[in-house]
Image (cartoon, rainbow, N blue to C red; front, top):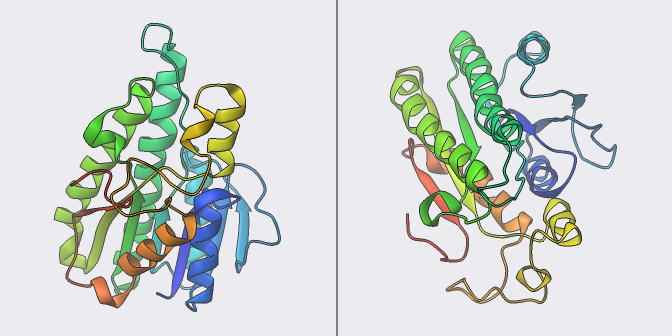
Length: 241
């Protein structure tokens, strides 16, 4: 998988992805809007806001100087929850900015890097099953992930000629730090992340970040070289895509 950049890597799913990719032999670069802990295994750790176009361009100039990028995982995202009639336009705009625009900016820079060095590469975007079933209190989040899926399919169409594959993974509900913060804030019921079982799954158990990270690693690797423009639901069967 070569040199891979993981966004939103300071904790949760992003950290799990960085750990799995490092274990598989990739040279991992990890970024987040907050400092990435030293415990996250990475060759490079940078504090970068994915919505800051100049900061993203500076990061990719550094990556190109190191030999260019082979893989990108667009994991950075936010998921504010609020009823539709009280959600502010600022919250709506910020959610789309981080989840959709940030994914676009990093994907564009990664594709230019991959096209430039001529080795091809793979981009994996983190989507969500909420796009397929909706979310009563997450309308901005759901809309942003729909944009991510549209971006995934459109980029796959134009980048295939450069041997660049673009796919997405839609993880099930995970008890990450961010989700537990939502529970503490009272926006997510505690029983949705408590215990060892998720009743919405067909496969017994709960979705774990490490398991989703393995799916991401598959989409980055040679074993998925025939797959592009697809969304894989890594959610134990809560939705059929």
